[in-house]
Each structure stands twice: as structure tokens, then as C-alpha cells.
Amino acid sequence: MATPGKNPQHKEESELQELLQYLDASLGDYERYVSQIGTLKYTAPQLLYYRDEVQDMLEMLMGEKSLDLKSRWAKVRDLDLQLRAKARIFVQEVGHANFKQYQIINNPPLNRWWWYLNRVTVDTTPSKDSLWQFWKR
Image 1 (tube, rainbow, N blue to C red):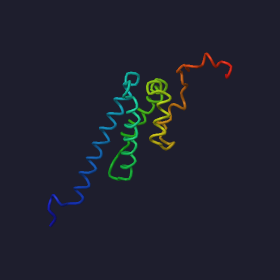
Image 2: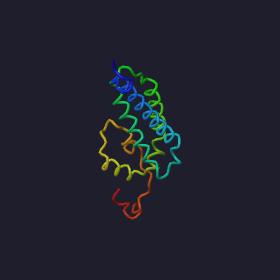
Image 3: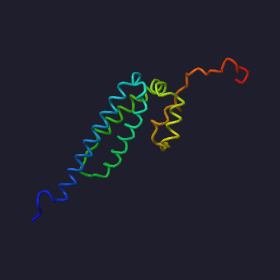
Image 4: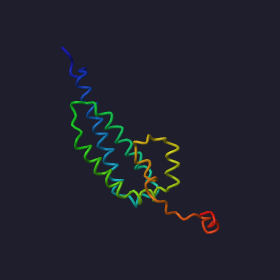
């Protein structure tokens, strides 16, 4: 007879619940950051890491047949659409040059599109030497 605390199935289930709670917390952080784009200031790059965390957790849990992740995937899709709609503001907040630095530091795969939003937005930062080097244009 197995003791209640030693049941491997029970432990696995509790671990899954813990992972789901962590996923939900990460989703909440991602949602909060997306809703605050434009007012994030120096914390703006953290949104990229929260989105990574959500993706990592969803990919890890996808193999669990007992879990229904449809509602969480739908929430991610909705938040991603909001992020894409606010991409210009978000990239401006992080800074085009900073985006490039984060890409170098983190080396994210290309399928993690949120790390490359600077490539689909126009850099509106005026160049310091643009007036003096007009002839190069």
C-alpha cells in the first residue's frame, strides 16, 4: 500500500499545478507590461523577458495531455496583438540601439519575434551629426 505523500502521480500533479501557477503569474506580468507600454520607462525591456518566460512555460507544458492550455494560448495571442499594435511606442521606449544590444546579449532565436520589433518599426531618433553630413544621404 502506497503512502499518500509518496505517490509519484500525486507529486507530478502538484508539480504541474505549480508550473501552471507560475505560467499564470508570468502571463499576468506580461499583460500588465503590455497595458503599460508608453509609461514603462527603464523597465520596458523586462516585457521581452516576461514574454520569453510565457513562451518557455507554454512550450514545456504543451506535452502534458492532461492540461488544456487553449485559454492561455488565446490570452497570449491577444496580448501579442496588442504588443504588435503598440510596437512603435514600445521600441521607442526601449530604444532602437538598446534593442540591438539586447539581441546581441540574449541571442534569441528568430521565431521569438518580440525581440526583433525594432526591425519592423522606423527609428525616429534624430541623428546628432545628420545636419553636418547631409551630403552622405
